[in-house]
Length: 276
Ligand SMILES: [Zn+2]
Image 1 (cartoon, helix red, strand yellow):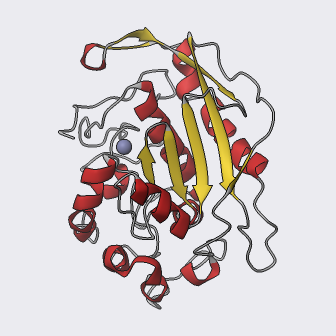
Image 2: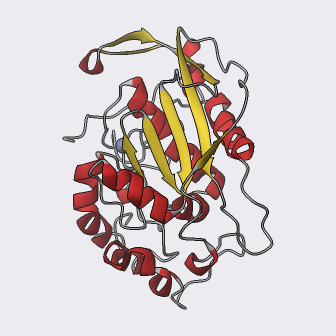
């Protein structure tokens, strides 16, 4: 069953969910679903839990100990303008930044343009939000009538969304200043800003059975979805693809993992609204 072994996660996450209003604030510090239930309390000391020997981590997924918990605390922004993605009516301008000084081992310093490229790929994917141009979204509950969006990365301050990748300490500091306790593990969202926890970006969500690439797509699509006006959704029925606005990392509730807002046939993947 999907929630077996992950049942404890939502309990640990309950407070975080309330404060971030976002299910993508899933724990990321361990590779094993059960182990991760310890991490919310462990905070930045979660490395001991995350390196539990009863799991066989992918060699491409760094352990907690390999991921720096802190860096410079300042941000470098991806420069220039990206291409316009899609032909949707509403142009969503977003900015991408990466904390300076994220380095470890032999891995070169993280470049904001690389992070920006990852986000652009997600937004431009065939079933991504940009395909709303071909499949406009109507939903009275969130005041959308034949809504469609296009996207463009900018480096100015006139933005709709600010996406930032940062080390756990910096996420804690900035999210904490907005009243969100990210505990060295979680990401958060405040105002126009999405703070992506480096640890989560590199490790994914334990127990959520998708590739790292798909995990990234799910996170970006989910968070952008909030900025497009969507709240959380629930599973629309057993065996159906989970809505991207569903907090899938906390439990699939019978749905099949899905990281795209639209199905291959162009249908918007929806479900009942969640209480949050
Ligand atoms: Zn959310």
